[in-house]
Image 1 (tube, rainbow, N blue to C red):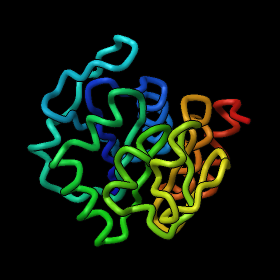
Image 2: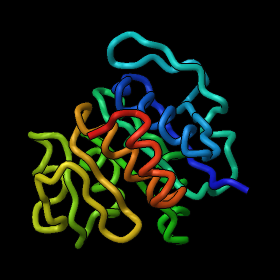
Image 3: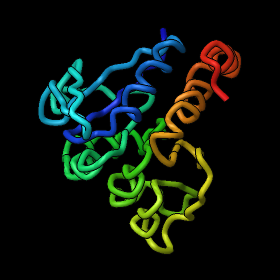
Image 4: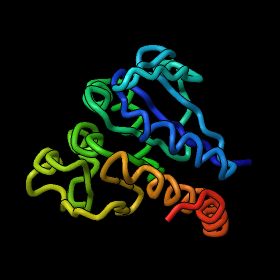
Length: 184
């Protein structure tokens, strides 16, 4: 049985950061479910609409991993969602993989206390919002600290997705994807 990855979208999400992991993680053989905050047709920051598989508020399971794309106002909208906060609390309690990119580490993970005492990264300009003195900001492109993964932005989406595939599907699958997709 393959692991389940829930990718959560809110209005104004960054399309590259959402679609890249959808594609890469499905190629890795993972069961990727797209959940929309407040509905199923979610419009991205650049006008691309993605049809979610399920409304997040109706999703009752605890997946193996959750992935939160950034983008504005998408990351802010994720951070305002009670359903997102509830899911993250459950994920954290069970030490399940939590991944966020771009503004989402600062707008969603930091307010939820999920980067407190951890190394994390985010989109340039959001470093202070990670929580002054609570998170240890690093400018690395992809950062893992325990079960929490963070990345910088659209240009790191492929690298981040392959790292998540490595964690969830194994080293050989990640190497196969990297080679087959000509990823650096």
